[in-house]
Length: 487
Image 1 (cartoon, one colour):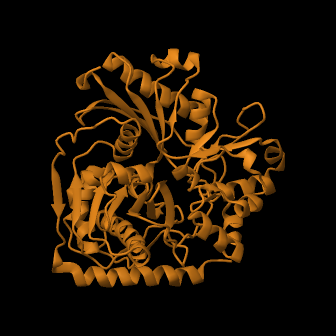
Image 2: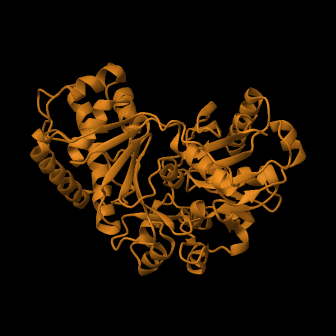
């Protein structure tokens, strides 16, 4: 088949939706589909999804692209959100809904383990901070709080592993998803015996770890018919959305960080060897041999602005009006600690809460909006500071995610960081990273797609001293309020 008749599908299984894109050998997106799904919160701290709905979204995206293209792809490659957990019984039936990264029910167990020497040992072996997000903590919760489910659990999977099982009947996990579980040794590429013993499970209850470029063939015949593709179509297992976003952003070179704000936020950088943080502030995940992705994720990105507009301001002013009005204001002393959903990096404090400090009579909706935007920036700056201390200096930051629709917010980020921010015109970075990984695994040559437009945002030094002072206040206020939390 000629190059102009060849394409690859990237399927990115996200928290709020699955995005599927097709990329031709010229590097250009041919078509894309996105199918959303919901998260339920049946009890405080619980965040669950229906795995069957997500599986159907994955299959729908692939089938629709194949129908639109009119012929089968050269390959299909996966990207996926991390930290989800789905226990299955011996018949392969889910025993619970999918427990996603945002689920906080295991907070107490995670905090106790994190404060121990055992927790510190597990962190340095697995690269995953001990936190309620991690499957390790979720399994401990099941063992202690839902012993009947724990006893029946023959297998523990994440959402991508569940999809692969349903498509192929195989129990496989890629190294980058495995290294976000808190159960996988990122030096030996095997399940870690100490972590397994702490969780109270055996290696046989987990899928087989394989490299991110592992090729799977042999779709179940009924699935192949449903998708409209041959059963021997190659699937590349791929990796986690965070690791693949780094690849999709062409940010594997030294000192090249990526900063993303969507529902949540993250800062990441590729490093050539394991480098865990003495203070346990950062994750280190394995992508491929000699490529580790180090950084930190924040719980509170765009979701905090959505809360501000919908709940705090009762929808009185639409977002599209609030953001420009907020960005038009000069810097102010009003400060927001943005920990609405607790926080992951760098403080790893599930009990942290959001606060506004310094409210004055003249503060209106746009002032609170700007304080929220600045607070999100300060939180990501604190991750970036930890990353530079652990992994080395950052010379370039590429930005992505929903916040990039506001160039004013990117400029604010540059001003607060005191660093240039670069925006690339690319399709979904995680799906693109999956496609790049798949193409390399199968020996297919991808064009650069014209590379697209690149915009640079240089820091405005006029308010540099103000932002430095505000950032110092931000760090001090969290430490102060932490000492005042009820025990």
